[in-house]
Image (cartoon, rainbow, N blue to C red; front, side, top):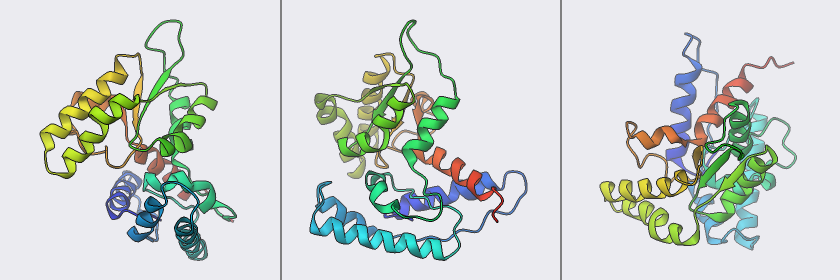
Length: 235
């Protein structure tokens, strides 16, 4: 269930490819995507307004449709929607995966070692929206015992947001250079890994860029958990 066709297609491509690695058939799935809902929520500025109430109602109806279609779990590939996860998932009869929980649980299981001796493992969160970063990742990571580091306002205005804007305008090299600076600012502060907490940031760097290995695409954790859910025997 999503509000971004690009994110939904990215999720499905990985879901099908990873779930068929052992020669199995891909689990059945149902897609429900409505990009207009994202526009309605964006116009509300992360506040509860008449527009956001209507948009959330539409999303709950889509969730109910998926439940009635026989889904064993529900996934929202669009990270932006996870800022509203609690409101959308309330009353859901099947597991409704939360991207922040999926990422935090995988990081905990990875048993990472601190970059600096005597400190806690530190995770960077690079987002284009403070509300999304806080609701989706910060609290969940801190509950797992991680220190969390986000860019300061200066970095957001000088490198993070300009990187996204440059990419949208077709200035690929400029976008990549700005994103590299954003990542390096976090990494030099003893961050183990950086969560790309915005769909706008994923895909800017080429796959062979060394900094990609220091980053987490949250969609990957969401895909892995969805595959696990599909393999749990149902009554």
